[in-house]
Image (cartoon, rainbow, N blue to C red; front, side, top):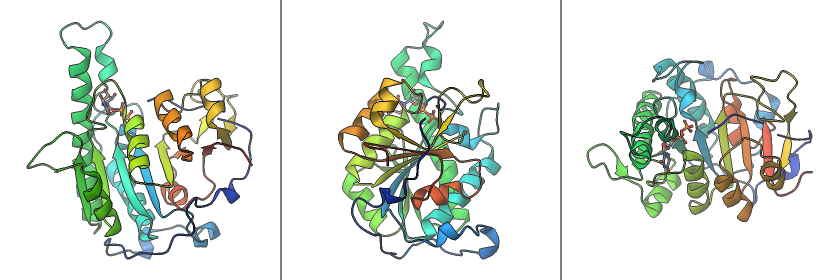
Length: 287
Ligand code: UDP
């Protein structure tokens, strides 16, 4: 899904956990090394705001700017940040995108030989390839993970079953959710909103290649303004390119906050998952 665009700057410090303070459960990630974690921000010392977070990682996080495919150094960069975030005791479900490999919509114009629905299924399979890459990268860091797919693929991954996913999270495993919703004509943003709601996540953290939501495409308009806060209504009425309207509407309906931030900046995933100020926060009301 698209790039960015957001609103007036403001502090979302009071935004806090909707369900109280998180405690630090045991994490099955092992081998945390201070050397690999050059984060020294004082903010990182503050208590956790969220107990459970869905992290949406776009496929573009797995490749270099302007390229396609899977670049393992990019995957490891995301994996390392995810690993550090999990070290704080936040339960993490990663919803994997596939745009670095294939998006169904790219076959809709000018091609009649592949039906659009078929292309969307191909896109869902692309997210599984990314999920496998992320799983290995996380496990190489010592994390216990489970890859779960919305389309059954025995021999490759577990089927996504909500109760089983919850059990993995409670055990401190990072779950990677691939194949989107399992249905064509939507994107993994919608899948992320859907999974966040059904897994009772307290935040949907969306990792993108820009700093948050802007008034215009910052890669084309140098005067685009970065918003630190927005409401769901702002996003929908101003047609800001954050996520599918369907995904935003779902979050709005259940007042699930969304944090949009830049994954390329080291430490941002960790900060976002901890509920620190990074990127743009979208919720029902601004401060
Ligand atoms: N897709 C789908 N149903 C879903 C999720 C994804 O059909 O529930 C397809 C869709 O074609 C989409 C592609 O998979 O374009 C890859 O996902 P997405 O574009 O969301 O990846 P991202 O932009 O996050 O990398």
